[in-house]
Image (tube, rainbow, N blue to C red):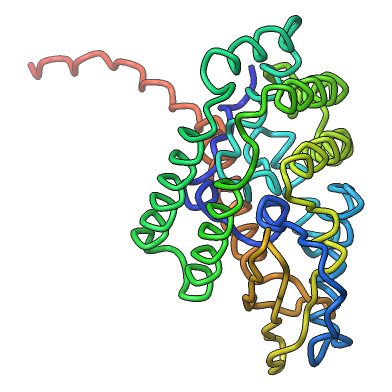
Length: 320
């Protein structure tokens, strides 16, 4: 009997932290390379760039290995096998929809079914899609303002991102039927190649192997997005980091990148553990996931057997 299916904590699902979600945030605009930021050669700034390099190479397994200390990585790999974690996928919004999306894309005949659905609902609907993009951008900004678990730094960053994505989506050719059908073909082929379309496939493959298989799917997704005007690989290559402050085992790193036609400027916090620098948000999320996995494992331990009932004793003989 399998343990209960994993469901990411609400905070993990809604967190748009650095990491894999960075890929959805970054878009190139083809500008000349900007000068390096002050402190670009520092260890904290280099740690951020190392993660970005892995994303640019579509190497999600390497990203996961360098994003956390080895003991935490090993603990989350075990929690993945036990269906108690899907980190680092849990850093994505709507992470619980990844496997169903892969299943839908890999299903036989998906190209035709999805193409027909697009033709019915979206083909040639450029104006309606632009209006929907504006509405989603406004909704996203309101959502960020209402979520109390975001820090001031996170809220400022994500508000910039949502506005920039909205501006891009308004200009993107989302109603182009030919482009959409080509994108569907790319994504369905990439989804089938992962072999992760069955319900238990992520658990059975394990964290390392799942992330390795998802690398080519990430590459295909980036290629599709590039076809709509967001060159994520260019943005990852041009992303700049610099040191804002380093105090003992705590540091702040500035990140600048282009998202469509918008320049994003944000600051992230890092913590040093075991002589290496890690994103503080990742450490906090991993700590929470490991604690929850341990608590669930304890709760599932079989209880101690109840002692057998005491044997019945004959009533004392009446006194004579």
